[in-house]
Image 1 (cartoon, rainbow, N blue to C red):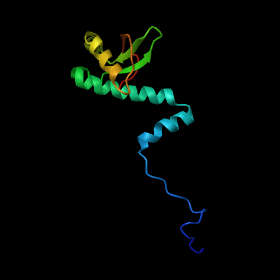
Image 2: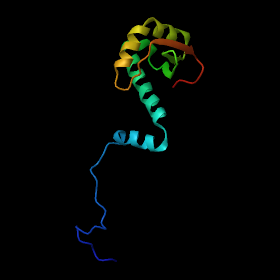
Image 3: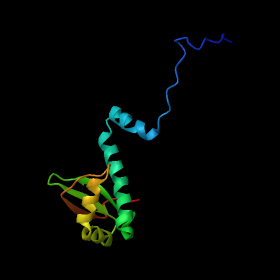
Image 4: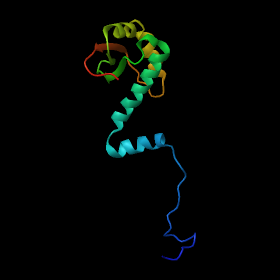
Length: 119
């Protein structure tokens, strides 16, 4: 067994202050080239919170997919009725989504129904 090193020995690793995992994600995503995916994951979570609070009947049935060049936010809906609910409240949802910290500003809402899997 090796003798204990004194506390001020520069070879002894220093403990850093603890950091939350959520605070480390942007740095790790940047290092891995995944910034855009992290941005959309956060936007998706913000969208879900918004829909739960503003259109509870559509909760869990939609997700933002992309922002088109013309400023339209494309949202995938699980069923036509969900898409209809979102379109009826499009102005309200877009304004609120643009104001959220992880939200995205968009000019209009475009809904596509059932092209992928929503969980």
